[in-house]
Length: 72
Image (spheres, rainbow, N blue to C red):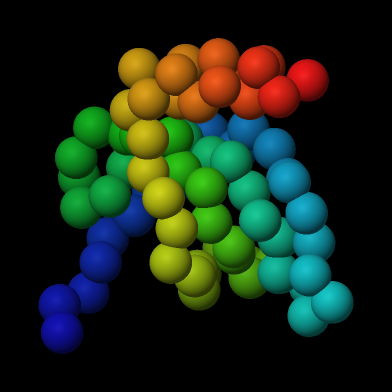
């Protein structure tokens, strides 16, 4: 399997921390030298290992924000 190249362009915030010390984060991440997208996933403390996650364009993030606002 090919290595996946990533760069965390901007750390936005931590959503939660697991008992094992991994943090679920919202970051702006560039995957394989592509334009950065908003990304939610678990990371280890060194940000070298990550879980599966979800990437969102800015438009998708704005739509998610609107949906979450309806829950309040």
